[in-house]
Image (cartoon, rainbow, N blue to C red; front, side):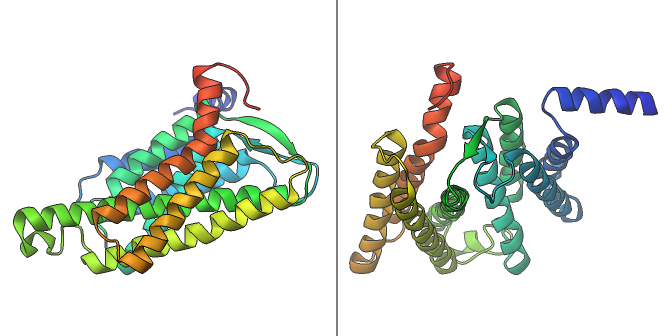
Amino acid sequence: MSLSSAFSVGVLAQSSGLSWWGLAALVAYALAALAPERWTRVGGPALVVGLLAHVALLVRDVGSLGAPGTAARLGFGPVLSLTVCLMVAVHALESRLVPVPRVRRALAVAGALAVALAIVFPGEWRMLGSRWAPVHWLLGVGAYGLFAAAVLHALLLDESERRLRAHGPSALRPGGIGMPLLQLERLTFRFVQAGFVVLSLAIVLGVVTAERWRLDHKTVLSFVSWFLFAGLLAGRHWRGWRGRQATRWVYAGALVLLLAYAGTRFVAVVLLGRSPV
């Protein structure tokens, strides 16, 4: 590619909202998704490169968070992008300790879609008047990421149980899911517990520091999600819930929490064509 062609691509990328970081993330995620499972020396590093470019894209696009009066780019696109980025990061760290094959491709596809969605729907810049607003926002997104990781492990847990019922213990040999059922279950609930703590802190901080507290869709759905996860943890502790009975609660709570922020703004921006309140 000539220098003039590269410059033209760069100008087009910037004008369309696609930065070099976004382009690098899309290419790396695509390579990780398309590489065969046996190409571990290609797919794994490509996913890591996609994750690093994704992080750089979020740091650049979400905005500066830290002092009163600064702005942050808010919207369902950036929130979904950051949530998926946290999921990929959890997988990248976890795979260094316990190999989890067959997940890389799905996460790479999710990462590419999340980056593309954030480029198409970048959200709007909003001033953060309170010094606690960045903390509240980061806690909320952190809860999204932890519960998203819990959903990922719950899906693996359901697939492991399904294969165990269909084919017996031989179906869970190395090269399948790659993690014992009990370990998957423990990890799932650890992520749920951590997400519940972070979500609780986010809700308390939001209620205590809000200048004008109101009972809108975001608040109602956040509380509904909190009660769902509280019910799941209580059922797990006192009734020993496990398996699909528990994973259904994980899916329900995560879906409601996703609707609390990203869902309401998706409806406002995409379906109704107006700026969210």
